[in-house]
Image (cartoon, rainbow, N blue to C red; front, side, top):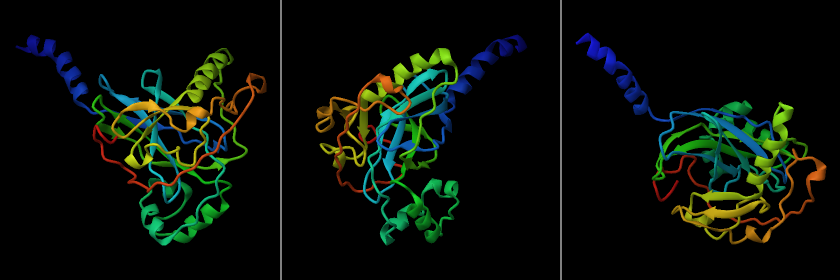
Length: 267
């Protein structure tokens, strides 16, 4: 009997491990996003199941605008990365009374030293920003689009002077740069609201955005950004790597919940 239990123990432990849901254990706090430039972000995720995907959700901090997302790429067991689109040059909107009610629920208020009920401190932080900030989180979805894990929401400033860090090992620089340039120049941006369909990505540049996934999980060519055929070279690429060009388009949408429902039709 004991022998049988000992034989079955590894199987039981493996089954218990599989029963645990995925978890986003760490998301990089970016020091800044380069204005009109790409930035790469890394995250650590545990216990993914077959068919799971890891998504980086993002939007500008604005009273209008739902989250978008990009699929993150695996670079090592449990380690994922993705590049964000290029943020437009935008001034931060002042805090209105209706918007304040929503901002009080933000996870990231403590990160910038603001109490949930301290509107004055938040307004001062907004006034000091060079550009409209951005917020992001990482989530895990199964093959049916159902969300099984997510991180807290984080905030990052958009600055003119902001450089993306290169890998520290010289031998990996060229390969890593090539991967991230390819990712940034061929972005597939996912939508979380039907109001985003047929509209430009709100307060982000078109450069590098090629395809979109609508809220029904249907892949399509981007109606606006496919015209921007020349992508800006990210700030972490040597100057000799290529020329630059830019296109600026904006749109108005209604702000959605910070935690959109996890359903196959709305990721």
